[in-house]
Image 1: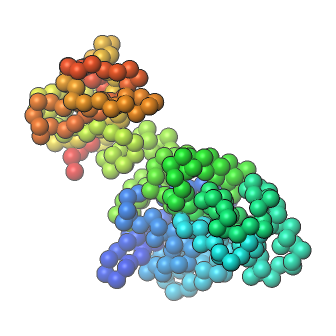
Image 2: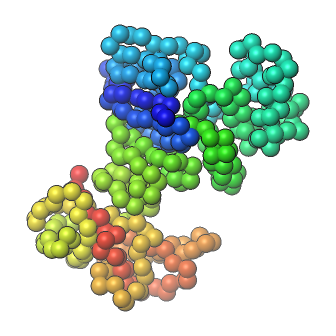
Amino acid sequence: MTELTVENLHLDYGTNPVLKGVSMQLHKGEVVTLLGPSGSGKTTLLRAVAGLEGPSKGRITIGNRVVYEGTTGEEVPVEERNLGLVFQSYALWPHMTISDNIGYPLKLRKVPSAEIKQRVQAVLDQLGLGHLGQRYPHQLSGGQQQRVAIGRGLVYNPPVLLLDEPLSNLDAKLREEARVFLRRLIVDLGLSALMVTHDQNEAMAISDRILLLNNGVIEQQGTPQEMYGTPKSLFTAEFMGSNNRLNGQISELKDGYARIQGSSWTLWGKPVGDLSIGQEVTAIIRVEQVKLNETSEENYLELPLLTKMYLGSHWEYLFRESDDNSPVLRAFGSHQQHDGQCRLSMPMDQVWVFAKE
């Protein structure tokens, strides 16, 4: 069952087009994340679905109900869309207890007091806050306040939960814990959720499907595995993960692979799209795919070690040719690498070759 459908949605800020024909669906029990750089339109799309922004064209349907129709100008106000909203700032009322904060949407819907009390307590228990109902927001930690904001969005069983960067106010350690909790909560309750984030690790951890936005359009969509492992464009390949980038020219095409010629190097890679000999291209390889001093791989570069950094779980090494204008290449390793020339092996099918942009 489809809980949310967006069709050919356009939205402008004055003369500046922000959404340029976005179409998407959210199915029941699915978590879809809107990912992209600042200004790509992800928050604007979420706010348009919520009714907080007015599109200029297209259609938005929640369940079987059209809440925005561009051809007729029909637009259902935000308070009648029955969506759960969780904001980046949590937006908790400081003068209300945690129970009152969570129960407020039910109070607005004139639910009987006894039922409000019962449903609020059930949500508090689900969130692990069952004993904190009579405290006030300032008496809770950031992670607990975030759970309260989620609880307020859940308490009236909305068909779709909208989350606008719900974890961004938490510190790094707490954010890791919170995304585990949030994913488990969404799955356990069978929720349908549309979430905005700029953090790709967060998107990959929580999502069933990712929509990557670029300049107001969907660049690519798919499962986290598809987005990371099979990018269809240079933008997607560079946005997802930590990467090395090499610019060169195709000198040979053979058996589904392309030979790339650089200033003082050659590599084989896997073309993405139709490429031709002599074409200027960009090769992308994930940093974790680069193998140091691996002699069994025939596709490699030899470069001097520029510097190394110890990051706890691994070492990170930086390499560069003698030319200061050449790009820095990175690799990971579990042991400290000594200075000098190193062999950087790159599996052919992990070197993606794109037309240069």
